[in-house]
Length: 229
Ligand code: HEM
Image (tube, rainbow, N blue to C red; front, side, top):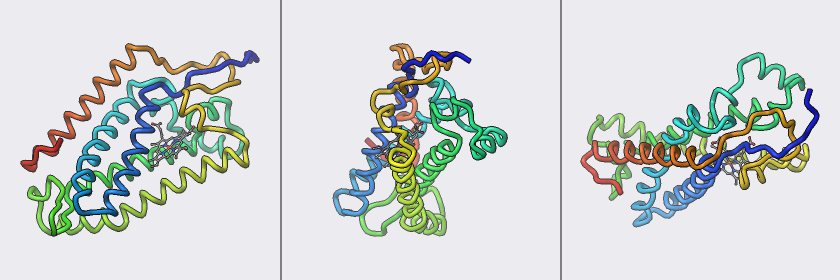
């Protein structure tokens, strides 16, 4: 085994920007949703932005930097069991660990469900999701109920779990995960592990994928006759 330790690029710039833009957008969505009134204009715009971000992240999970790809971090049963028995390899501790992988997938899924249900939500006062006219009133009632109750609670729960897990790793396991999500690198890992490519070509590709996500979000909004942004 190569014992040389190095500084390794784990989170490429597009993954980091995705993460912090998602954090700001979700916080703003919660605030605007609670404030209501005119702030709902922003709630809908931000929802459209988050849809674009999610589409980007799914595509980036296929073609993005090595450690951001689903095939790198989503574990099979054997890898998960080995990790749970404390027999994980070093690579399990470099990117998302096998348990963290499920929390990432869970967060993306729950945020996706929240955006998806928002498209069909109607507050029966001034504001409605862009696609309510495409479905029956029963579906609108179901989506509205999900968006305002379970969807919201699950989202808050998964975010709380995410932050508690980060605190647990930092304070109990003395493993600081946050710096790598800021500057991109893990320090003191084996030099033979692959780095995430993070050059200008990758960043340009990320911009194209984000534009594709934004295009798709605008198209979804236009289906209901709305113009979106
Ligand atoms: C609205 C709140 C938040 C949401 C929705 C959220 C969502 C996510 C998502 C989706 C990922 C996976 C990133 C990817 O692979 O694309 C992630 C990872 C991460 N997040 Fe957050 N996050 C939130 C708040 C925070 C906060 C407040 C911090 C720190 C101050 C933070 C630090 C991190 C770190 C360090 C990782 C990487 C964890 C690892 O190494 O496995 N997040 N977050």
